[in-house]
Image (cartoon, rainbow, N blue to C red; front, side, top):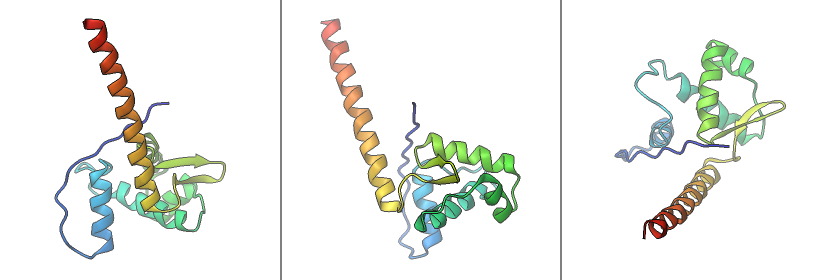
Amino acid sequence: MSQRITILKIRKDNKPNINEELQWLGSSLGLFNLRDRDSSCFRLFITLVKSSKHNEPVSSDEIARRLNLTRGTVVHHLHKLMDAGIVVKEKEGYILREGNIERLIEQIHRDMEDVFREMEKVAKEIDEDLG
C-alpha cells in the first residue's frame, strides 16, 4: 500500500476562526488547492470531521446529497483523502482514520517518521554499496 504524505509550510494567521484553522490544517497537508473553486474538498473534509466526532461513517451518496455535489466529485475527493491516509473506507461509508484531528495528525507524523527511517536505511545501504 502506498500513501502520499504531503506537508506544506504555510504561514498561519493568528485568527481564532475554526474554519480558517481547518483550512490551514488541510492546506498544510496539501489537501486543498486553487483548482477547487467551490471548496468542495474542504467542505467534504468538514463533513467527515463532524461525522467522525460521532464515530459515524458517511456514504459518498450522503456526502453528495448534503453538499449538493455530484457523486463523481465526492468520490474524486474521497480518493484523494484516502491516498493521503486521512480517510478510511468502512462497510457503512467513509470516516476519518482517527476519531479526532489531534490523533489524526499524530498518526500522520508517525507515518512520516516510518518513511524517513526506511529512506535512511536504504540510503545507508546505497552508500555502503557504492563504497
